[in-house]
Image (cartoon, rainbow over all chains, first blue to last red; front, top):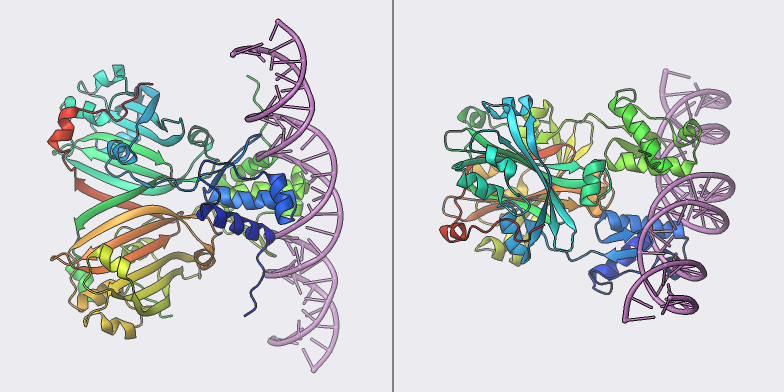
Amino acid sequence: MLEMAAPKYLSVAHALEGQIRAGRLKPGRRIPGEHELAKEFDVSRGTVRQALGVLARKRLIRTHPGAGSYVEFGRERLEYSLGWTAALAAMGTTIRSRVLRLEVVELPDLAAGLGSQTSQFVALDRIRLLESGAPIGLDRSRMPLTPRTEPFLRMDFSAASLTSALREAGELAALSEEWVHIHRVDGEEGSLLRRHPGDACLLVRRVTRVSSGRPIEHVESILDPDLFHMHFGPNPVKPIPASRRSHGAPESTTRR
Amino acid sequence: MLEMAAPKYLSVAHALEGQIRAGRLKPGRRIPGEHELAKEFDVSRGTVRQALGVLARKRLIRTHPGAGSYVEFGRERLEYSLGWTAALAAMGTTIRSRVLRLEVVELPDLAAGLGSQTSQFVALDRIRLLESGAPIGLDRSRMPLTPRTEPFLRMDFSAASLTSALREAGELAALSEEWVHIHRVDGEEGSLLRRHPGDACLLVRRVTRVSSGRPIEHVESILDPDLFHMHFGPNPVKPIPASRRSHGAPESTTRR
DNA sequence: ATCTCCAACATGTATAGACATGTTAGGTCA
DNA sequence: TGACCTAACATGTCTATACATGTTGGAGAT
């Protein structure tokens, strides 16, 4: 069968991707520049730029104006579900945290959503960085302001664990609930995470409660999607209510 | 403070995004064409195309060669965690399924990973479509081939529920486990889902087992990330092992 | 040996033009 | 009225050129 020719920019992207995945272009190393690739593939520099754009969106390369494009393939996926400590251990390295914000804020909507008795929260925002300085995540934690959490305002959370701080304050986590979205970063988030505005990242929203159901933490984490995945379970399968079962409704009610 | 001028293509993108979010460019409607926008903003058509590329990557618009670009803002997010049936009900509409593949395949690696006694699986691939025909997800289910699942090979899964079929075959789901990733679609997946290769989608991998631990289904679902999110819990928080707790290791061991 | 400067590299942005391919609407014909 | 055809629209791809901005390495001075 005669295969329709792909556009040149996709052919170039495919060829470079093949070299990256085969290890001929190695992680951390610079790939040939745009002008050089244009000569090599006998295409225009614009076509090369389009191809590199494809590779950049696949997170195979990262371009640095003035310096060149570097291979990023080979980064290991990390499991975030158990929090940063587990991710840290799995990576065999340390991560640094930089506190972006630590103050009291008034959030009535969040209070209503959580069933919190107070609408004042300790707001702790941190960016997580590899030793190299590369950002890998952004955390926005909100803890109801109580006598137990008020001392957090004077803690150094670049070095301290919030989970530990909560525990030591007597706030024993018993129940958590999570939502996972794809989140497209805005300009500020993009700037912090070294992403382009609109880029897709993993957003995990977690609510933690004590055994009585009182919320102790609400956190939204924006995670590098090429570094992290989520893992849940094993969990019991929730039985389907009998009324729904008896109908035996198929997933699709429209015949193809 | 003197603010550095954004590139023209970002200014154009921002202006159009503002119109979309303000409702002046309405969902489903065509936006002005590239030539018209070039005149309107007094920039080149290439600059307009770059701006539209930004909006396309943000899923605010979708372009159709020859026809124009249409606004997509306003699509509702759906929760996938309880499966297609729940998503379907929440949407207040039906979805159609198209079977792409239904056959027996040999998958020793998957068998090893699942602890399955057989390395033969019933492979059922389906694409999920809205009534309009728009694709919203892609499912690849693998069921160990047993006398109970062998009849699946002759079932019409464009209309039938796999979950129901398993239950009616006596395979009672008791335990499930899930992983959530961002997945960048390849050419074939992109073509099926009307996405560009490299686009980020939500990939949910779920393993379901009966109470004895025997696996009955392994499914990978690729979901439109702008339509779906995941929800987990409320679940009990797993206590941290005492040995780790006693060390009191902070999340970050490196002081800023 | 170190510092400074600058040329030569890199990528980013913008423009213009040409051609390919897809879609649509209107005119013509049966 | 419906079918068909085609012109005029749309976007996609490709090329070339020019200029802006960032980085790097080497030469020269101290």
